[in-house]
Image (cartoon, rainbow, N blue to C red; front, top):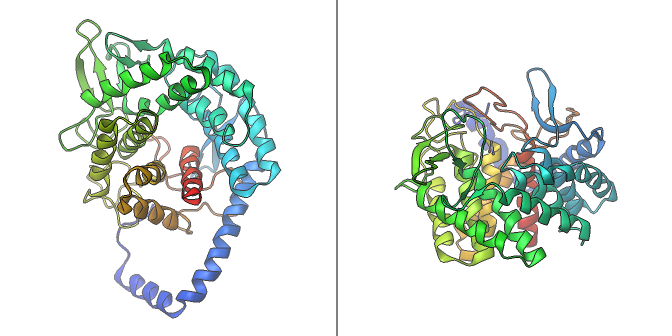
Length: 392
Ligand code: GLY
């Protein structure tokens, strides 16, 4: 686990060594870091292709890869990682592997039991469209949007997130659901059918009304009453408690409203993205290196686990938000996160053969699941940030 405070003597040794070899070590370490990253990218290409075993995370205690089927919410990220590594390296090997893993996701276009269609289909097929203009991939995106639309309740004005816990929740909507709107916005652009765009806007407006607290942090789960259509519970599922700020949830909100602004140019989404980002960036518990603890209110801070995935989601979103605001604070944060992640503190040991790039993400702390370990979506938003910075 990354500690917030280094012992005093270690800090002095570090400062001395940095000041003695600053220029030389910067040049050398730049080369070394690129070589180390390249080595990690190769591990993704080497991972055995298997339609039933998408790599989701790596349990470092047992050194076992958690492998999931295409129905898992994380399945699309691995293909997305390969598409993005292809964009960074232009090596055909990555494109070839990306195509194979992307094809395995197609059957999810009919899966109406989840709101995670965007994560699965857009992070795989959607990413491929940045590389090649594939008509069949576009068709799959529209078909997936049609399936996702069946989860929309027009009286509540939202897409239903989960079907489990039916004895506790009537119509749960989680902040993560904002991320699935990108699939709907794109489906309208591809098909010309404005239904998807309108549905996404309604969902974003309902979330805007009910998911945020006065301090601009957000709730994880809003449960709607299916008779009155009003919120009946404001709770958490993956955060520390109902009143806390779960770092990745805050990240989904920042990313979600920045992305919604891209498609709508509605200033209230831009204001929401800025206010939500301000809560995150100005929080007293955001560590110096910019990588958040998994929840801003975990009383174990500074000894709580970090969540690199939250840091990379926000870093990617803030490069985009910088483009709409010209506010350098956003760009500085994203660059700082990337610089710090490109270090041995965070890059997975090069000897480890598992198909991941970064260590120290936290998936589901309340369930004691995926704590402080490599997780596929942290890599996805890391690569996306690299590409977004490169494109500036
Ligand atoms: N969408 C689930 C998560 O962020 O863990």
